Length: 201
Image (cartoon, rainbow, N blue to C red; front, side):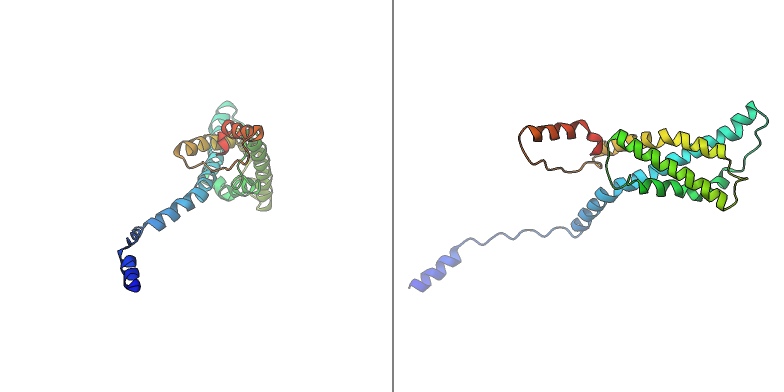
């Protein structure tokens, strides 16, 4: 009788409700979101930097090719714009130099980033001049054009990056979770510092 009662009591227990299986595409969608959260902002900044340098090159080419000859006829005509992209290896020196400054792997405050972008653009300009002399393309790319690109990129790249980060922040793509250990005065100071410098995400 004891055994029968035990069996009946176990049978009378409520069975656990099985958890529903996630939809087939839920795991892949979550993986895509994680990949975008980690690599998406980096790719966006990479494209923005390239477009900023391209804009500087286009502006310098337009001023050198149209404005200066109208003011002083001694300035001759320039080659087509595509020639400079080919001679400068599709602006690859700027991409490599900015990546060398770890501008795509670390988040910095604005003025700290300005210091790194200045150094990166300067190294890229020197590297571009070296490539031009190595490939004997000095007759096609003038030093005045490269100097103008360098000067304009000093301001264009950091401003473009700051604006892009604000847009990414509004879209929720620039945020990162942070864990602050401590609830005293030091913890509150760290929290206020994070809130004041929201540009780092």
